[in-house]
Length: 437
Image (cartoon, rainbow, N blue to C red; front, side, top):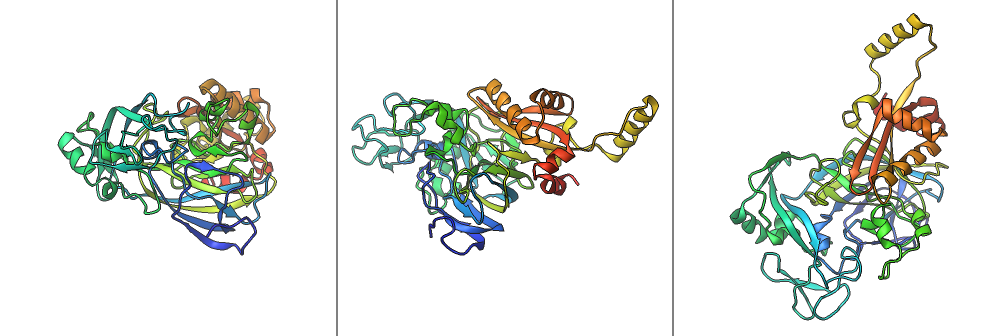
């Protein structure tokens, strides 16, 4: 049942199996509210390619209906402790893309249009398999605004630990049962990309390590979900479709479309609250991805997600802050071991230096039109959060951290060891201690 924040008594656990039409609306209905300290358990639908070939979806993805969090007000933050991410799909398909001329209005991700009858956001029907399987329900013309330029179909082992890409015959057999293999949730309306049966990369085995490409809170301006970030959000400025924004409105984004592979089970993501109740949503689970998502897409799957939510009052952040699991930290950003501290203490005694700083890892997300802009954004956010000079953050990220690419063209992690007292002062000390005791 959809509610307005504060309308009903908060619940310890909120189950979510419903989805948006791809658009995040600050005045839209929310589920819940979930209790501060409670859990959200969600079924997520595949992101990227499935929604991309479903013109009725207006956001490039199909994320869960937002959930209000008890006590979350504008100017607070919500910590999302990722307790479980489980891949439900038995197979995935993906690859590089190219838009199809004439089948969209300005942006193929958010404003698909039938190239034959001109219907905007046309309903579709599926006829057979292959790249021409998605048809306009009105006139019967091919309706996908995208085509695969180089694609693959991948099946997973029963424990969802490894995946293998298939040849043409096997990919076609999977395509014939696309919804079954994709395990598309009942509430999802997308056409699964497995229908296309891509098979240009066969016989490649790889490992699975699932994470959420979309996790965050509702922006304070209506946005397509895939554009809730500084890079894709820039495409909305002056756009010819209904989701056009002015450049100054991008400040209302929450950067929920991260594609940062460290947003996985065990990590903690702290998100800004820019609408009452926060409006937590999730989606676009990736079975695996290398840093940068250089193909533009990866193996998107249906998934099961469990999140613990905690409100942090007065933490007025502009974008997400991440505490990755220790093994995901860059080498220089990892907490000092007891042996290393003893060695440093010996150095300090030998040269007459003072005490060694007590530091803790932190990763601040930055987004922008390109990687340089995203890095500058992340550095500024980190400096503001911890009350440091940008120059100091640059030095820390260089000698005790790293700049990591989440997604091309413009999502980065500014990761470094920060003074523990500054992290405590920001209200994030308890979360840091949970991961880096």
